[in-house]
Amino acid sequence: MKTRLSRLALCSAVLFTFAPAVMADQYQTVEKLSLENEKQVIDWRRHFHQYPELSNREFKTAETIAKELKAMGYEVQTGIAHTGVVAILDSGKPGPMVALRADIDGLPVTESVDLDFASKETTEFNGQHVGVMHACGHDTHIAMLLGAAKILKDMKGELNGKVKFIFQPAEEGAPAGEEGGAEMMVKEGVMEGVDVVFGLHISSDTTVGDVEYKPGGIMAAVDTYRILVKGKQSHGAYPWISVDPIVTAAQIVMGLQTIVSRELKLIDEAAVVTVGSIHGGTRSNIIPEEVEIIGTLRSLNTDMRMQIREAVTRKATSIAASMNATVDVEVPYGANYPVTYNEPELMAKMLPTIRSSAGSENVKLTKAVTGAEDFSFFQQEVPGLYLFVGGKPKGMSAEEAPGHHTPEFKIDESGLKTGVALLTNLTIDYMNMKK
Image 1 (tube, helix red, strand yellow):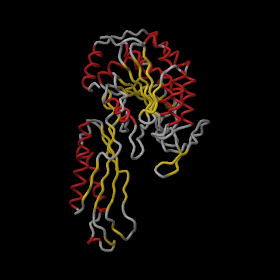
Image 2 (tube, one colour):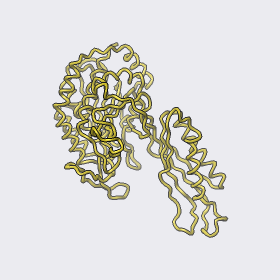
Image 3 (tube, one colour):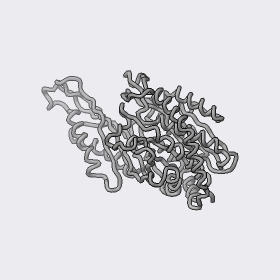
Image 4 (cartoon, one colour):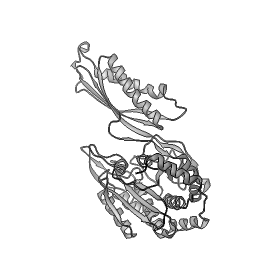
């Protein structure tokens, strides 16, 4: 496999010598086909929305994706990273391999939206009976990528190279004790031979028809952390013979808040240190022996990420020592994703394609968000772009828009054709870059 640097150098050489050669009729053809296939794309989306499955359990989802791809004439690989699906379109002509990716998993959320195709699915998750919902829009991602696969198959004669369609499971994180997602797909070789990767995310607070982009870090790195505070147990009436891990944990929580406010150069990038869970103790009159703190760290560049990790360990250890307690710090603890990073040179060269696909007036430079995406593992292998596509009805304010990962999540399906056209045009235009 090529190293990231060698791939980037090759990509940069191609990009700097690329002169747009695609005529306007390509965009008209793609727009026409996107409109003709819109109903099919919406039907796909509604099916996947109605029957969501959790991470690493997307068995029926994968089966349906494979069935639809085979109906288009693709040879399909299944079972990649447990439930992933991959298909390749070979133009028969020399050129780069472009990868297009969609994530396919749902969330343990019970849907509250009144839709004919609302999810009624339930399952067991972490010992609880939960509803299952596509509360982040992955159903739309599947449908848009299937739409692009159909159009690119029809336009095979205009391609130069290969297209790899990646339907990725477990973006929301593999279940405890399991591997999954983009990281596992990379380990299993899904990026071998790929030159560039493109991905989209529907956005419930971005207006339908709009596309948002940002060079550099567009989504944060995420690191889960765990701090186990160890003290000495005693009767609650005699705290002087204890080493109180609860009081120590409280001090640590307050100390962690100073990492962002006092140690990071926030004029460069945003960052977040969150404590999400504290567990310790059993009764009002017992000072326990241990307290567990679990939280999440978000950062938008590698140096800041390393700085936050070091600071969590340093502060927790020092505060605990001042209280005569000890700590075990694990960072990362479980899920951790790199920064979702859009190569600036690649972004600059593909921006005309984005504007031609959506209309210049609809393409907006956005700020980075502190949400995270494991698409970043693909971008560590090859240059890639990740974009936001509007799913908010026109006339609705961003404040009124339902949030991702909530029971109220809802999108306007008229925005899907924009994503289909975007994936298709990015592929064709990249292939038409000439040395």
